[in-house]
Amino acid sequence: MDIKNFINNEEHIPLSGMWMDNYDPATGKIYGEIPSSNHTDVESAYQAATKAFPSWSNTPIDTKSKILSKIADLIEENLEDLARAESKDNGKPLWLAQSVDIPRASSNFRFFAHAITQYASQSHDSTGRNTLNYTLRKPLGVVGCISPWNLPLYLFTWKIAPAIAAGNCVIAKPSEVTPVTAYLLGNICKKAGLPAGVLNIVHGTGPECGQAIVEHPGIKAISFTGGTNTGARIAATAAPMFKKLSLELGGKNPNLIFSDCDYEKMLHTTVRSSFANQGQICLCGSRIFVQEEIYDKFKKDFIKLVQELTVGHPMSSTTKVGAVVSASHRDKILDYIAFAKANPEEYTILTGGNTLQIPNYEDGYYIEPTVIEVSNNTCKLNQEEIFGPVVTLMTFKDEEEAIALANGTRYGLSATVWTENLNRSIKLGNELEAGIVWVNTWLNRDLRTAFGGVKDSGIGREGGFHALDFFTETKNICIEYK
Ligand code: NDP
Image (tube, rainbow, N blue to C red; front, side, top):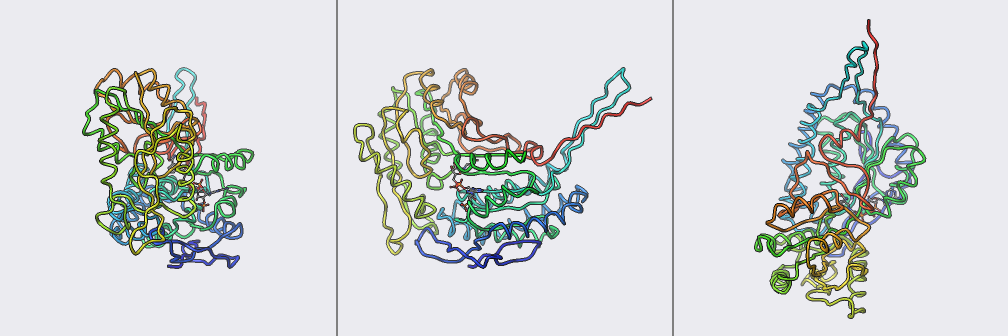
């Protein structure tokens, strides 16, 4: 499949004439080309977006809402094709794309189609001073949305939907590693009646195409999801230009398992929270801390279930763990495993730790789900984000130690706590340094809630009205009347 940029509701080849290969992670083979766009393509997208803005920002809310709902409908109608495309492009099991990624992309549009009809601003009647203040919420103009490869359409739409619902025009860049569903979305939006120039999708590398979006002086805000180092670079470029920034970055999420938990529910959910999407979800729990009393039992039961996970071709219905996204990402994960193997005094590999050759797909990027026991939270594997099918196990004694271990990293995206003790849940909810704390559940999302991280996991919040706040600017009008 050859992919084109989507600018002004038309398909465009890159102005430089440069293309990049797109790989199928399940086979390691090239299966298409994508534009290697640069600042000239971004400029062309910007011109289309800026031309569309006056009309789109003044379009009645009902009309905007209907178009967003129609996009949601069309994503649902095309679920099967989109799920197959996502699975092939990313390496994730087909059933996961069918049950999570694509339904969620549709929900993102449906949610913001509704949210925009309920979005209100404030007024302040300064009683006794004959003064009325009212606050307008205005769209920003042309905004940039940059998303990663792990949940391609899911995260791409999570940014685009609120941006256009709020009346902005968008220049969006998916990861060059997983461009296909973003490409398919362009035509869906056109079919749904989204006017030309409201959404423009440019494909290319981060340092060239992404950076051109961040640097463009006319683009008013950047909503970015990706790695912490990239986020820092984006902030360094955008902050002196006073752009609004929302940065959803990396994590090293703790799983705190207390001996009083609902054991079976915890065990099965922990397998999922460790290895879903090959461990490539920013919310996966990669550091598992278990209270001493149940550590040996947990270790045995967890390893048994992990060893039962079928690693295989993403299109096979029996596959639980598919291929990781790219050869370079596979190599990064393997470097961490090699480091653990080279330092046996610090790390014990309990299961996994190798690549796998799947018959007929020997060049695909498959890694065994890997569990590594560590004795110290300051070790490299507990401090650096691996973002693959690798988790560490360690014990703790009590609540105080659990909190210290959980908080002992530069990251603070999410944390999961397993306990039946209500007081403990509340205490940990207060004290854990994370933007999201789950108690006795994982990946349980209500789209109205705030989503984002603390510390090096980012700044800003997405979700619900938080996203609409980000994509609008307030203006206060103060009137003194007689
Ligand atoms: P990257 O930071 O490498 O890339 C994210 C996006 O930014 C891609 O589209 C990339 O393009 C682009 N990009 C890279 N460099 C620049 C630049 N200089 N200027 C502008 N854009 C740039 O992250 P990954 O794609 O590897 O995604 C994995 C990371 O994302 C993990 O750290 C994970 O934790 C994080 N993540 C965070 C989430 C959250 O909600 N907090 C959710 C999901 C993932 P290209 O790929 O084409 O180079």
